Length: 260
Length: 312
Image 1 (cartoon, each protein chain N blue to C red):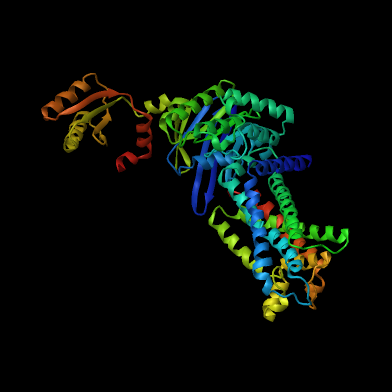
Image 2: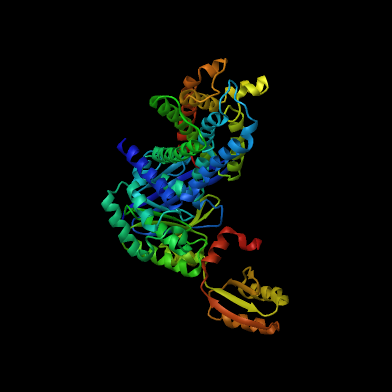
């Protein structure tokens, strides 16, 4: 049991050492949402209206935070595939170490990555005029919900990375991140979509997290009359927990059966 | 001498094909066993079963006295594994890699650092220990890989094609390193496609084909199993290879093997055989480059046993 934690931490340190050696990787991951912020805030933002009024940039930033959390999925998948392809995973599996450490180490390190990305993006938000208007507790809760979503999707990434040995699957996952990111309330209010599409978007786990974050930050555009929207904070906890409940056991099982 | 690796009737099926089909092996402590066979013969599957990476369907497999199926943790604590690729972390330095894997072997921080430095020195990597692996040559990576597998002083070491893809010079470096291990009492199971490698490194060789061991012995025993020496004729003109074949088959009474311009056959056990062949070639008016009597190579043993020579 003690080794589970200690081996996990050893591997977390390994991934953090990667971060120090190749900071450029994380930089590109963060550069993308910053670019998106600039595009949406300055290029497209003029044509966007927020239902109920309010600044589009204030509306946009929680969506950007959420999208950045969601788009981390393929990064996790790449890292897992890479270790398998280079034989590093097999080496881990031949060691007398706690098997779960490989996965928990990966998950912890990716959560650290996500915290760094989120910090940079919050700074970027401040620069374009976004502000959290809630209390400290609400602000912290909003950030925690965003990281919870990331944690859940890290495990989806781990599972998908263990499932395949084909690098083409990463491209597929990256492509699928877009409909997942855009078919949500991250960039535009679901009220502006055709009714059925709006409903699908509202039930997207990303929407729950983003809507909850807007509400807790005191940013505009979170109000709605559907059940899933009025319960956005609860759903921002339930969705990630459901995802974790499915993908953690799946990943552990898959890891135990690698190669067979 | 105790047996460190024991496999009895091990079977492993992928889909409807058996990668291992009644695989038997016994490796005594402190020896190098070479698993020799073509691609797809089951060598790597055998190593993966014995190193606990995959589970076999039936049969018994024991390493260092522990059953790989029921006591995988005990097996893992006793083995080192060098897979086909240099499984080291590209972004870390050689030293960081050794410390990382040492920590995962549950060595203390200080002990991991001490062994890392020892191994870097032992594998001539001390100067480059702090450089990232991406700056290493193929041979250096392999040596680091080998060093990583020795961190916990394993009783049994698995080397899966340790020199595949290396240039001849790096290959010799790796051979040197492997030989020095066995002098410390480590038991080594080595898979290779290179007959020369098995011949030079292994105490005993098991020839593997279709998931089972088809012959086993010391390199000399295996060469001896082909019977006597071989007589070899090398012609200058590709057009007369057929004539050389008929001359050799008449003199030796065996079916000669052809490899480009070289025709060879097992030599009958009589002193005059070389003279007989020279005279027969002369009588047939064949111009030859070389006629020689020599010991069979492992190549020939292998090809003879697997029957691919006739096909070629």
